[in-house]
Length: 146
Image (cartoon, rainbow, N blue to C red):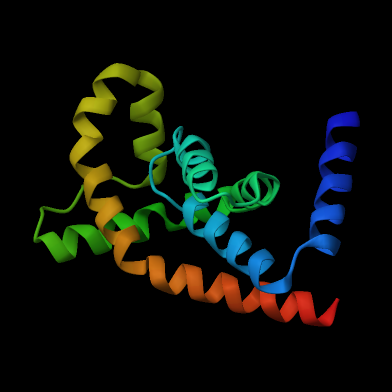
């Protein structure tokens, strides 16, 4: 609870002290990175990008956590779009089947599903401008109304 309270206090401070444009860009960048289709490296990738470009890491962590459920929901949309764009054969099982496969065979699943992750990355890359723009506009609207 103490950690959550510290994070909340830091977010409130950042929200009040940051220029609106920088805040909106950081939220949009964090949201876009949070939808990156490789679970396990999203936060590391985000931290690397935020460190290199001197962005607000607190907003990255917050948007990364908020984007986890949409990440799960959009993974197969990214995958199908990537398969379509690359002309790749369709992966023949859904989310539940993939989850059971990963649970049953963690090491083999990485090798077997690696091409599908590549397809999902292609789908994500195509949709990235939409994700960034929509998150920027929503955070800008929110910043103006609150």
